[in-house]
Amino acid sequence: MTKPILIAGPTASGKSQFALALAREFDGVIINADSCQVYQELSVISARPSVADMEDIPHRLYGQISGVVPYSTGLWLDDVSRVLGEIKELGKRAIFVGGTGLYFQALLNGLSEVPEIEPSIRAYWRAEAERVGSETLHGILVDKDPLMAEVLNPGDTQRIVRALEVIESTKRSLKLWQQESSEPLLCEDNTHRFVVSFEREVLYERINWRFAEMVRQGGLDEVRAVMALKHSLSQQGRLSTDGLPMFRALGVSELMAHLEGEVTLEEAVSRAQQQTRRYAKRQLTWLRRNMISWNWLNLQYLERNKLKIFSNIHENG
Image 1 (spheres, rainbow, N blue to C red):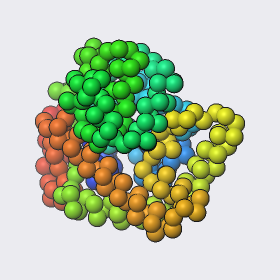
Image 2 (spheres, rainbow, N blue to C red; image 1 turned 180 degrees about the horizontal axis):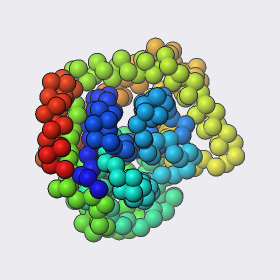
Image 3 (cartoon, one colour; image 1 turned 180 degrees about the vertical axis):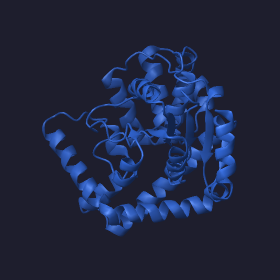
Image 4 (spheres, rainbow, N blue to C red; image 1 turned 90 degrees about the horizontal axis):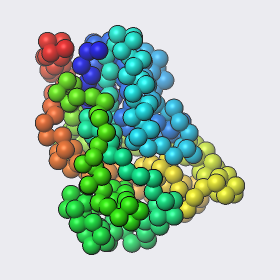
């Protein structure tokens, strides 16, 4: 199999556009590396590639699982292993694209075999995150697991919760578990790696415009259906107190608040745009810390140097 191409970047950075151009040039299959775009119910709100794009170029692992099914990085790696086998049989090139840094990290470094967490422990820390906020939670982590507290941003709620549930459940730091990783699916030196982004001001403008477009293109109806599903699951007693990742996707809770009459649509859109900008900022911080050796590009550069980039990939396999 030719060298896979990996494209990371913050939300609204133009990753998918770049992936499509590469797939056309290199007979590629685009593989999703975004944890929200895996869900069937989230197409518009997760900015999943259009039907036309997916019909034009083969795409894998987009909308392949229901949001009511817990989906983990480990399950994603299992799916990727299967897809890579299919792509090898077809003689095509794998092109990974997405904004979930943990997916890329697991792909290149393997995944630590952390034991299953007790549901009650997981529910407790996720409830605490909602009650006290990420900074207070980070302070708790400093006492319980200083090794992880040192490397985690105080605003990174999801990973702080993960570290707390692991230390409580296993009595062992997540950092120590991470040092015992499984074999990676890809060798970093045998890949082409890109991070696509913009200057922060331009990125924020794109985020604001894109979310408004999502609402105009049916995002509100999509969230209405997700909200109905959530209510149905709650009535059946099937939705645990900590919820499921799909219901925490960017824009979902804000638009639900509007549909429940708590805020105007304008206010809901504004809040969702703000949360997305904050998320993009956290993504950029993580990418700069963890992907310093990758090739950093922006779309303006890509347009001017596309042939040069293509030529370099052709020359290096």
